[in-house]
Image 1 (cartoon, rainbow, N blue to C red):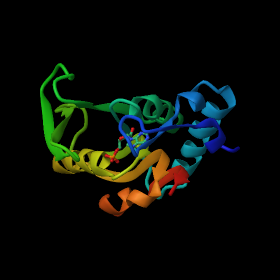
Image 2: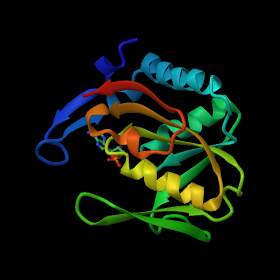
Image 3: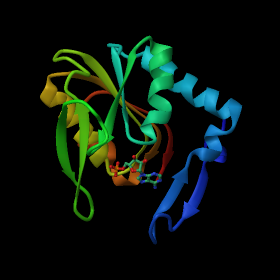
Image 4: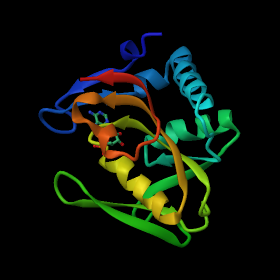
Length: 173
Ligand code: AMP
């Protein structure tokens, strides 16, 4: 299936020079949605080690991670932006182009030694996925893979991540 044909490209959003890869047009297509979830699940099933938890990064990671977790008989765990999770959290601050941002996870969400996979819709610079990976590594989890629908290859994001399989479905330069 031609997934790219279902992804809408919005030039200069959210700021000049960025081409936003809009997945809402893919999500509303019944065949496209099924195809991307099934394809990512199939790739996961080939992994040497399956995740016990699929970690979704707020907010578009929340669209794909639970569906993937369901396929893999794994649990879903959210990693959220600062101040959203109600119970005790672990936090990590990371740098953006301008300023910093913070990701959080519930302290009782995953235990040391748990096998986890980190999922988001798009990997661009890799900064967000790297921060999530650092958070889970600090907890003592074993990261078995990363999964993204879209890879913006020219930004080299995957090179910033730990050396485990990084599963993606479509690439843009
Ligand atoms: P990064 O930390 O640079 O890898 O950015 C990843 C996050 O930003 C993901 O959560 C994406 O949803 C979002 N993102 C970055 N660039 C784009 C883009 N060109 N189109 C759509 N989403 C993007």
